[in-house]
Image (tube, rainbow, N blue to C red; front, side, top):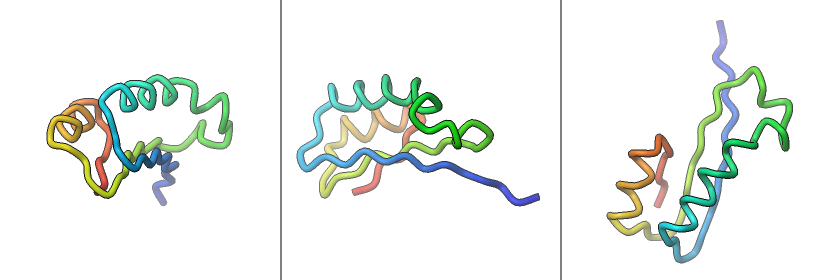
Length: 68
């Protein structure tokens, strides 16, 4: 069986913790915006050139990949 994933990315130049919170809220409605994601595993990714340690911790605890 081939695993099918749906990656969703948020990119910020200067990320702040409140922006992570907004991203988490938006993830709750992802299937409304992208119905094709319904039968796939959703993999959220938050990216920036630099992600502060406290923001990385918040992302990790929320089950979101941090890419810097």
